Amino acid sequence: MAPRAKLKIPMQHRISSILLISLLLTGCIGFGDKNISQPKGPPVQSLITPYDQLIACVAENNIMPGVWAVGEIIDATGKFSSEYAGTGKYVSQGAGDMMQTSLMQAKAETVVNRRDPRPIISEIQLGIRDTKQFVRMDYYITGSINTLDFIPGAAAEVTIAGIGPRYRQNRAIIGLDLHLTDARTSKVLAAVNISKQIFADEAGFGIGRFFGDTLVDLDVNVQNREPLQLSLRSMLQFGLYEMLSERSPELRDSCQQIVDSVEGVEDTTTETLKIFHPTG
Image (cartoon, rainbow, N blue to C red; front, side, top):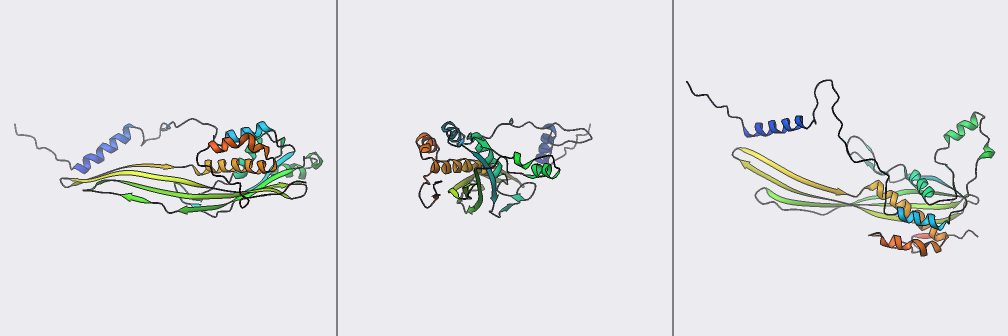
């Protein structure tokens, strides 16, 4: 019997075949008209920040009598992102809603919704709502997110014979201004200017070697990035505390230790960062 001829498969074809089979076995690629199984991720949860405890301390002190509302807290950075599947703004457009939630958590005596007046206006125009039923505001909060600066980071990479580690670091500064206003007189009662650095870094290790005539390139990469929108919520919570503590200095005696316990918080109580006008 004549010996069989052996079929030689190039190395790169073998690697491609192994990767394709692995994808098919894990269900990452589906063929036909049947639904593929959906991957399960982490469970749904409420957003928790380091300053939730601070807002709870504000609530315990019961220093928010009257009727409170939130106006516009706009994104004035003018920065857009083209990451992932589309183009959009870097900063969340829901800062006002975050602040309104903080007012509720801080146990303001009464919170009225001025975020979207369209349902109320529709009922007024239909003649089924009397405007005299509405509760007038005593205080409202407005502001803007007006700073988003990207700071050039540092990077280092060492490669010997196609093998070596690398590291890269980047930062961004986000800043906002908040104003607490007396709705009866339009007098600004307190104003705060708050900023925070957003940290991101990346570490990796690469190997590029020839095996015969075949180049094998392996790259392992790990990225860490502080959540921008969660940091924004923290800044709004901290800003609310700062404005309230200017109106009620005794609040600092009860809650300042919570602020001091949060890593990285710096004192912003200088007059250059805060303006306060007594209510009289």
